[in-house]
Image 1 (cartoon, rainbow, N blue to C red):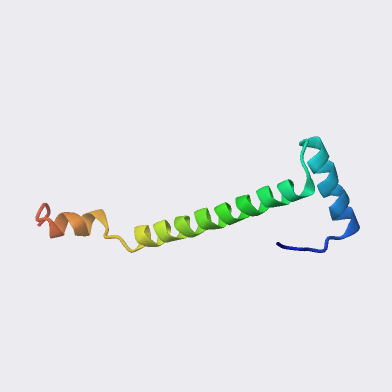
Image 2 (cartoon, rainbow, N blue to C red):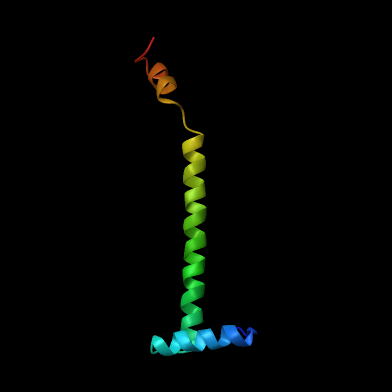
Length: 70
């Protein structure tokens, strides 16, 4: 169970969104949290992939290592 306090205007926006989706506050907030967590996980994976790319060898170095270039 989680309880949060929201400013009145944010609470009203949340209510409007929930109503427009035929849902309730809890479902809308739950969906937002899930998306936020997934986005952060995707960002971390992208950072890891970028770090691997940056740490890889250049094509020239790889060709030399494989004996394809003298």
